[in-house]
Image (cartoon, rainbow, N blue to C red; front, side):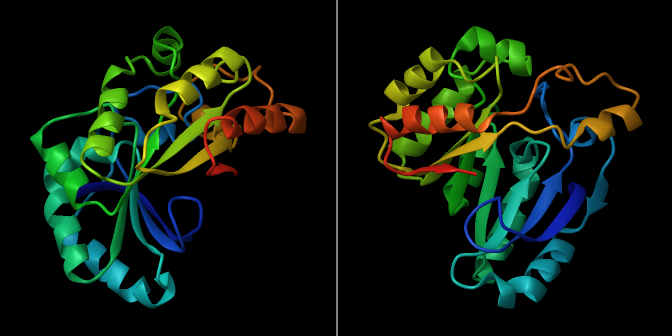
Length: 241
């Protein structure tokens, strides 16, 4: 059984092609800009039989084409790694491509097995600066960087994703530090710059919680172009979403 928060059919932002995105419940990070704060608590969600999800994926498989498939997001899907393993195995039996969208902050034998089975990892690196990462997420980034190194060392392809938040993750020194850290990685297929947005603010209001970045403006075109130019100095696969 898997604790599912929600689904998105025909998703185009969470991996290659058209995808069924399964948002799982529960995440140890507390990202200030989280657009899905309702997925953070480990309480909640719907206990779902894995064959139900396999059935959904098989029904949508004709729309996936050569690149599409299923992406597990959240929340943090590796928090349910042990229960995800048989589900991913079943999807692979059906010839369905599987992506895991993860912050890389959890590591145990089940996570390692899960990532070995996964076709593509979408690795969300929130901040390369350890102090700013902790301020942003409430956690260290050390395991995230170790997870990236494991993916590289074990030949597991991944996309590096980076949310550009003004005054938090758009410092030139941090972007350059990230570039220097990852520039020689061979398994990075794509670097995605994700503009900061405030689409989840209403969820905080509904939940009676304060959105702590309410005074943070969204990116200007100039800020996005500047960040793209910086990333381009280190990678030849940068996409500005």
